[in-house]
Image (cartoon, rainbow, N blue to C red; front, side):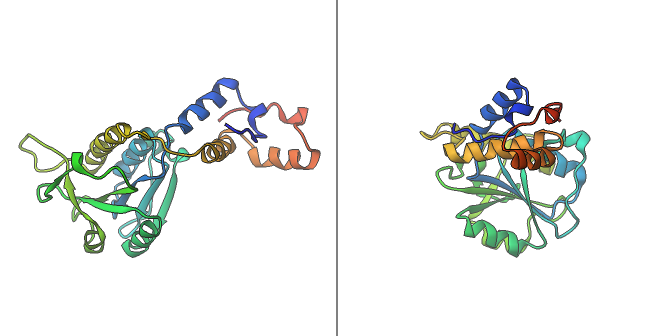
Length: 228
C-alpha cells in the first residue's frame, strides 16, 4: 500500500496494521438502505452489522425520524461507516442510481426471490423498510425486485435488524465466492481509507495535522497523542 500517512507515527504499530487489514475487506459496491426505519435500537444494530460485514456506506431515509444510534448497541461502529442521510426516498434513489446500484427490497412473505439468489456481480443495495409499513411505494417502484430471508418457523417475519444481518451474511458469502472476492477497493482507495480512519482514530488529529503542515514533519510535543 502506498504510504502517505502523516498520523502513523502517532499510533501503535498494531493499530496501524489492524486498520490496513480491515481496509482489504471493505467494499463500496454493496450497501444497505434503511427506508424510514426509526427505532434507535434497530438502527444501531444494523449499523453494527454493516460495519461487521465490511460495508463502507449506509443510506438512511429519514422520512419518519432522524438518524439516531445507541453507542451501547452499535459499539461505535458508525465511526467506520459513511452514513448518507436522505430526507425522502426520491433523493436516496437518485443517489444510488447515479452510482450504478441496483435496488432490491426486503419483503417478507411476498417476494418471489430468495436473498441467496440476488445478483452479486454488480453494485447492489439492500433496502429494508420501517418496522410497521415496510419500504415506501417509491422505493418499491424503483427496485429491480423484492427478496425474502428464508424462514422455517411460525413467525411471519424477523425483526428488521435481524433480517438485515441475515441478508448481509448470505450476500457477503456469495460475494466471497467471486473471483474478485468481497473486498474490492483499489490500492489507492485502501490507502485513502486508512488515512481517513487514522484521522478518526488519533486524538486531536486536526490539530496535529495543522502543526505538521506548518513544521513539515512530526513534532515531539505531538507524540503524546493517544489512540481513541
